[in-house]
Image 1: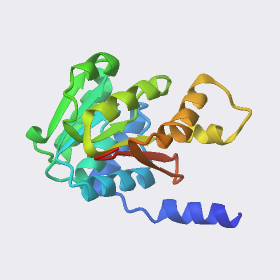
Image 2 (image 1 turned 180 degrees about the vertical axis):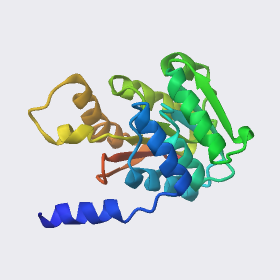
Image 3 (image 1 turned 90 degrees about the vertical axis):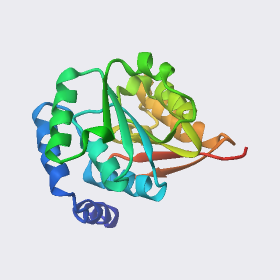
Image 4 (image 1 turned 90 degrees about the horizontal axis):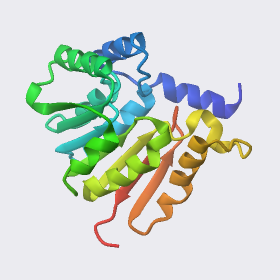
Length: 211
């Protein structure tokens, strides 16, 4: 095992996932809703906490693991989450109930995100997490940047696309979309960006108050 592999393994194993999120992870895997890793989950929780988020938008509910991590970091926030899979949303609702998340702190929307997002108010969220179908990731991030307030952050997990973005020979449409996010959107004067390589990767884009 190389030094970098050893560091990555240590980082993965050092994350302490709360019991209620670990239980939600089991349910997510049972229904085939691939959850974010504990490493990425802990990072988005820290970002939610550091930004003192009160209003959070999640594009792609899955079975609720990422939403629970976000609320773990922002215990007074209200989470609005969108998914087109009713089964996944049902599992997420049950996981939130089991975790004793008050119903007033979560709003579940069943539908296609590209149809729902245009109806959302501009600049009304502190944090937007994008974790839906990867072929539309650029459109989702554009919506996310519109929806967050100045100083708000858009988070994109899985942005390393299984390591494909680092392989020049990988040129499928989804891989190129993730590369575009990493290399081009970060260069916008309207945002400051950072890429974490922990687990599946996490792109962070914060909208500057003045640009």
